[in-house]
Length: 323
Image 1 (tube, rainbow, N blue to C red):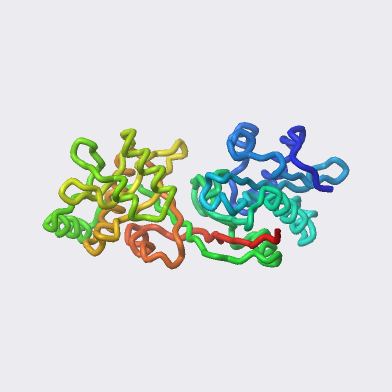
Image 2 (tube, rainbow, N blue to C red; image 1 turned 30 degrees about the horizontal axis):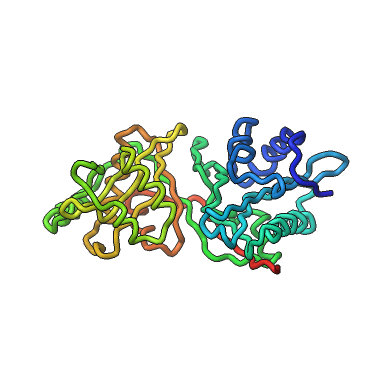
């Protein structure tokens, strides 16, 4: 039977996760990390978290979340995860868990169920063929997972595919042709360096040029609070960014993204910003970088030029809900 969240089963859910979810590459959970990701998350909803029980044994765990202040949150509920024990990993049981989440979304007057990178419950995963280097957030459903196939079977549409990419930073240097781009950009009045509030202005005007609430939040915060951020500027006005430059405890160089205001494209600033970012991470002692981007995003060429390799694919998915 399926029941709403009951805290007495916490350890059983963690044990289930550490047997089954790790098969799809997710990082193991401890009591502390489970609480941090799920129960202490401000978007955790016990009524949107479900357990599949058989003779009082946990055989499945499903969690979703809602929030009107989230991107698309006025119309969408987010599916965070569905994990089933191996002997319960059937279309029937997956469908039961999916429907439980969807019913809660409908109760919250949501019109669609989404699996995407805006989910505030971040699930870390290990980068394949590395010494357990980890990425801090899964941007969708791994396309090799049983859940992905079952979501398709249940009417979910793949709206985009994300490439997860990885680079070990040991010995990273900026190549001469990129240094040449920097010289040409300088001749056109552009500089690429760390943001300095005493010299640079116009961050929010730059961010207005992107339809990305994550960038608005993180880059606005980092430049306001002094967190290092690589920027491109024209006569002191910020016209592009890459960052922020944050070394995570895992050794990963974390950053929110890279962008150049549309009015200033065509000067090679995207490439220059990204290589400057990699250099900044190497200087602060980051061991590696990982990122995800759309498989059709032209920026993949920039990442590959820097040495990044695609290591995994995730799907962003959606189903319209019947009210």
